[in-house]
Amino acid sequence: MLGYALRRLLGLVPTLFLIVAAAFFLMRAAPGGPFDAEQTLPPEIEANLQAAYGLDQPVHVQFGQYLAGLVRGDLGPSFRMKDFTVAELIARGLPVTLTIGVAALVLALAMGVPLGMVAALRQNGWADHAVMGVALAGIAVPNFVVAPVLALVFGVHLGWLPVGGWERGSLAHAVLPVVTLALPFVAYVARLTRGSLLEVLQSPFIRTARAKGLPPGVILRRHALRPALMPVVSFLGPAAAALLTGSLVVEQVYGLPGVGRYFVQGAINRDYTLVMGMVVFYAALILLLNLAVDLLYGWLDPRIRHD
Image 1 (cartoon, rainbow, N blue to C red):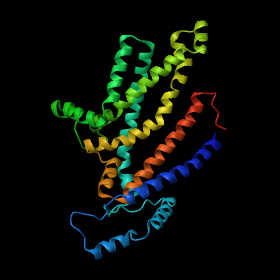
Image 2: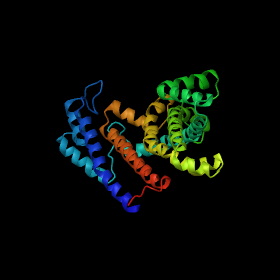
Image 3: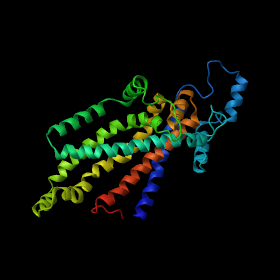
Image 4: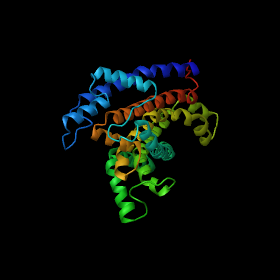
């Protein structure tokens, strides 16, 4: 297992390099620059700024310097937020983003798996139709529509929850962002659990367990649940990354000080290093989460061996 994990980690390096290279050259190819503003700077000042940040050098030289800094763990300074490095900005926003994302993932699993099981065990019944109907609506409605609706209903009209801002340790400020992020993934998890559990319940080893006279609850817990969760586990890696990247919209709507806000600001301001830092962070996160899912496969399915 350890050797497999190390080989996979080494295999992630070329993928991360290609992502970094594509983002770097696309950023440089887009029109405009980090020091463009409504008021044009004098040529002397602009030339000094370009030289100070190394933007007067050829693009391939800039790329080599960026890679050298990345190997040392240096993401560089922010071009527009001059008092901060990119690493400092990520460190400031990461706790909020992780809090919202992890809570949303836990909520999606805590609600989606039981709902999917109920739908599978009551196949073609009213519970099945109700769960799948709500799941379809949850998938179809995007979070940039759900967020304002929830804020309007529970924050403005009912006044139960704050509609924006963030206070550390305040559960009330986290409820609406977490629910907004989790709802589509509750629907995905419920549909995956239902379909997989229906397939597992028709397997020969389940029929054998029934023939031995095992109670339905025992069959479900000991024999059917773990293999039925395999598609859900496959979904966890991309889902966790999507929850964190999906917080870009939610953080903007609810005014949360997470890393998504810096990604949006960096893209608007053409802050090269800030956008690149966000790309590196999200790319590394997605690759590591997918690796974790592959390793988790071996625990769920004894037939899978990572040699």
